[in-house]
Image (cartoon, rainbow, N blue to C red; front, side, top):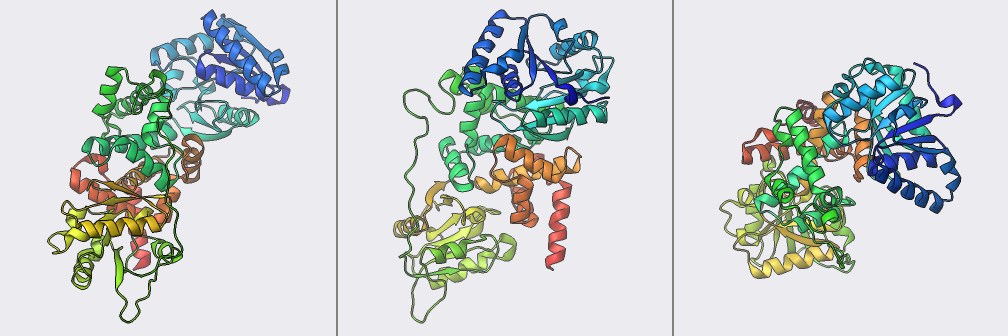
Amino acid sequence: MPTHQSRGTRLGVVGAGTMGSGIALTALSAGLAVALHDTSPEALGRADIYLRKHLQKAGKEAALDGLRQTAQLKELADCDVIIEAAPEDLGLKQTLFAELDRLCPPPALLATNTSTLSVTAIASATATPERIAGLHFFNPAPLMPLVEVARGAHSAPATIETLVKLIEQMGKTPVVTADTPGFIVNRVARPFYGEALRILGEGTAPHDQIDRIVELGAGFRMGPFRLMDLIGIDVNFAATRSMWEQTFGEPRYRPHPIQERMVQQGTLGRKTGRGFYVYGAREAMPPLDLPEARRDNSGLVLVSEGSWAPGLAERLGGAGYSLREAHGEIPVAGFVIAGREEEARSILERLDRGLSPETPIFCQVCDQTLAEATGSVPGRGRIFGFDGLFAAQGKALSLVSPTDAFETARANAETLISGLGLRAEWIGDGAGLVLPRVMSMLANEAAFALAEGTADEGTIDLAMRLGANYPVGPLAWLRQVGAQKVLRVLEHLRAVFAEERYRVAPLLRRWANEDRTVRS
């Protein structure tokens, strides 16, 4: 199948709504000729205003010479590539593609902008499925740099090659993905929302605190609840439900009742003025005053052996604390950074015997709850759980307080954490805390996707960074932290909740075993 870029691509766009208009603007801005179709004159009128406004603002008003609008599908017959941007309804899309197949013969290529439906199922309504593929743009299309090029069961290699070149010509980054439910981004991102909803539903932390921890603790541009409000809670819920149904009830994609209730109530996020946040005259989530790390801290801090808080010792030392014990020096705090399998309990008991009751002891609780870690340790009232995996980065730290916390010890704990430049986020004693749980499930989903041939490792990470604005790809994060630790977090979640949702991807388990073999 020939490529068309050599003589200037003529692009057809079916649907003049938000996504179709955004695709048209992207193409016009790149110098392509565009035929924009919609059966609604009102939709075409709104699109015309939108396109003129943004092209004028960008100083590209001349690009409008390459635009024609039409209510007749047959007028797209001279286009080289036609992108369908109709609502997410399989029957509607199949009807459209059957008509496009009849009116726009080869060598024209036909692409669907679906984000959740099967490209193969859409192409099945045509007589030429080899010229059909998915082109999933992200909203807003002019701003988001990624486009997923989905290879249907019958898509010809030349079709994929031509569409990849078209996306590059439009100034976007294409990633080729298999035709699986959710492709790369919508699939791998499910735990970002799903686990956050479960943490909220379990009462471990409120939605705004979860957002703060995700944004300040790991560098995400938006937390899951702010992002759901922006996307539209109904849209996010529909995507999750579609994934769940297409995979015949896969537990990892099970929708959450909180979302369903909000959809029923009509609290859909920014577009309705109320979602998880209330929108109006004031910003829903005002900026926070964060403590500055101090360089004049003094005092000995004991840090145990272990690998569950990478970089913590350096952060403590950089803030001015001494990590080397001198004769007669009284420790101001102790940190236990061993994992459960490394006998953290015995270290806690030793510190408890040697430190005064007002001295806080911090124990990492990524692969165990605080209750499990402390057990019957006599001084458990001054033992606080902390997120070791994210303690050395970011500006916020998840902490867990015992129910019978010693008041002086907790005050001393707050002072020390603030001195590290961290906002203390006290949450409930939930398995996996917030970030270890969310990030481990993202990495697990990415490992499932990789093993199933959705895309290669680099493509998956690139797609999540560009398509979802993640600060780091989930597989790159897994490599940084170590597969063994992610495995331990997931195994703990499965033990606590006894759900298949938390089963470990076989590939991730293999990586963990390989790591263990190398280190032993």
